Image 1: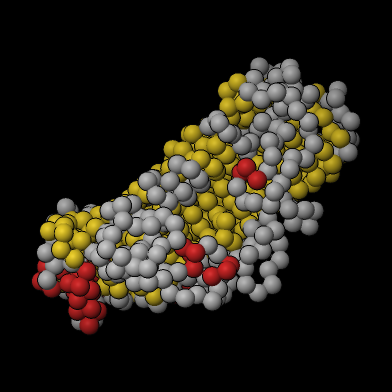
Image 2 (image 1 turned 60 degrees about the vertical axis):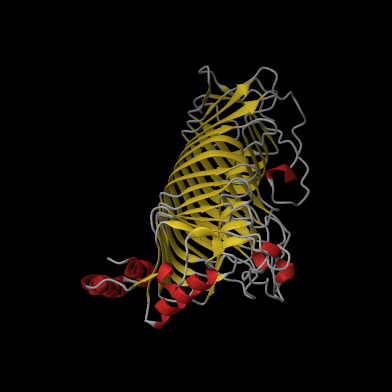
Length: 523
């Protein structure tokens, strides 16, 4: 099937499957229909492109895109060669950009890209999120578009990682309010602020996409977008690698969700590998992340924050392996509320982690953290199954009081956690099964500390302990806790402290029949 037909039909099938069986049947018929004929091909060299790496080929590329669109759709083909693009390419509906093997589109330092457009809502998000025209490839309100093949779009060191000046671009691909987008096979390199930024789109399919922005900033920002399927992505960034956001750049609070990411590899040099936020105006629901390898993160490996009023729910992580992450898992509800309208503090709920392995990085390291905003905005109803985390450790005994919180979204916004493993604050309905926490070096802090909340259980937990820590698991003002079938790494009982808390194991607060539980220190 031609690339054009693929770009349109895959997105249609996604939307149809969500709509119901009858719509899915229609999409199946639509997929079969165009198989009998190939989409028209518009070779950029036939419109004046040289592919010599020095001549500005943007005018020829735009002519080819316009011709394909005028013909009712087609493939704009880039044969092998280097195409300098000093002007913004204006994408159009029903057009697929096909980068053949050996083809490369190069950015330019000529300062002749489209200027950043005015945005009356730019106070609600960072500059790069508020402006879309200043990109190598730009489109708005388009349908059935794609980037396919095996070639490369390279910013060439000419795109801006900060706020661009006149004629400068800070993105490779910038798309708003699009439907049925395919982004597969190609490589995006040196993207400035963003390798790809999409906002307000629906129906996105990506397979074997490579993004390398490790010398500048973000890999792929997917904002206020629904029905997304990403497979076999390989994203290496300096800032966030693959991040889901919801902002107010389009003048509305829009939903996000129905997203699947599988078989992918992510790495973030300074920041977050797989992230929700920080821009979080509209709500997020139905996300599936499976078989993902994270090779490093200066902040969170798996990060999730609700800073601007978003409700985040029905998110599932499975078969994730992380190494070299400074904060293996972090969730936080914040109160920034940087969004149009009248946002209120959000929620995080119904999140699952299944078969997760994480190895933390030192200097600095941040304990895995689940942090609700307050008693009315707790993080709730989460399960952790076979979640095995190893952190550097090496810290001494410290106060078990609540650490500081400066209100930011980063892992360092919360002071040194009083637990080396899990620190839980303002939470309810948190359940661990068959999980483990260990340190690389002896640590004077407890393995786990839960403060303020209810219904917290650990079943089949293994925790590394230290004689210098006051206890192994602590509950502070928790209504309903239970530790069962659990042990330390030597097979001994875990020391549990429970201050202002009540047990839900059996019938009493001091249930002595709980296997592996040392209740001698209960308060």
